[in-house]
Length: 353
Image (tube, rainbow, N blue to C red):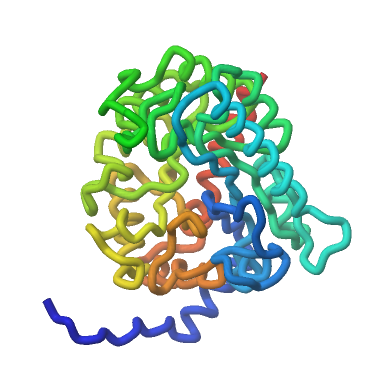
């Protein structure tokens, strides 16, 4: 191993960056997984210490972001599930509060594909609410409708640890998890997917066990998504998708959103050791395997995601510069940066009710 200090990765040249920024000006650029601070944190309207805030979104020409009400997995009990639900509602209301009539940056809370596109045309940033971890559902499926009433567009079925809905790809031994508990989806989990379909929310299989993912694809009437995962063929990690899972995503017309988590992109890597070229390798692999219509982009910023030359929302054009180098044209970039995800959103909206 060479222990010498490495030179920083050179910044994109001005012409390439200008071309990327020009494309960002005209397409919807949607990051499908961003964590929010809880219970308190910096004002999102100020340029602060978070990897994503509204000024950084403006600088990086990121027109929309899925802001997530994340519920950590704890020991399962009715009281714990109720507490998770209370937290989820409070977080969704905080996300909804980012739309203010008088503010230095104009925001639209967008809970449909049309609303995300309208925000772009209006010159507003789109804030898209989401929920991560079906633990908060408990045994009460009406809670899913309450999430949707507050604008949530997807529910990540699990996080780290099994819950009452499904098995996770990362069992929590400290919580007493066996390798598998339900054999994928529980009976309640299958019913929860039915409710998600009914209210028009997407089924997010990031964090789920592979059997859970396959069963979700079979049960859901709308395409499934993985909002923040990478490719196992390039980096063998429990959170990444093997080839047959990618094929399932394609077969149900879903989308995998490649994400900027260093350890998902390169084995055992630290963020400073990973570049947008490594990120684009995963995009390339997925596109070559299942087609451009089934791949997208996410960061997992403020939830562990960042790499050396994509450290915050302000750096989003660096991703586009790398993809342009590889021959992706504006039409392909429009699909990767949000068009594919908007398509599956519209399908979920179409079948709702």
